[in-house]
Image (cartoon, rainbow, N blue to C red; front, top):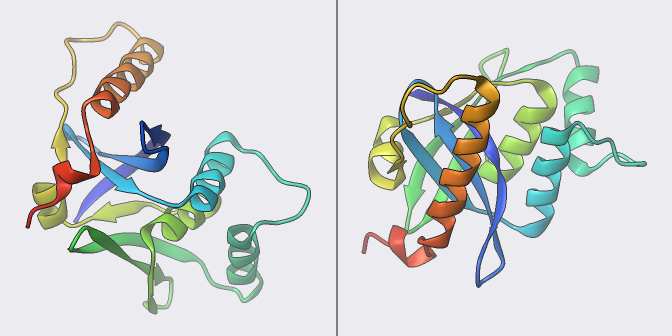
Length: 164
């Protein structure tokens, strides 16, 4: 398993399909996952620290986990079949629950839970985006990463991930 970070949510044009982009920690591969609009909003809200007036479903689930005295210890993206990703929520008592990656990512962001992806999925669907030369500051690196992601989105389509 390789740890991944959430880079962000973007909209792929011209289809207007939301994508969550994950980045391999300590590596150069990015993993785009096409998601629904509601899940994209939930992930973006969590990344930006926004709290809606009423809890979203992911907020409710995170609060339920806490209230029941448990913690979410890991989110794992474990399978890719016919372009559909599958994730597993792993709890502190080793209980595992199958879930959609988009819901799992939204929940992980709300609970501070690390995200992992299998090496096989990164090898199959990951896209290498080499880091640029020694960046002077983290802020510059983030801006360049966003620009590389925008360039990537300008040239990618869902068909690029169809391995059949």
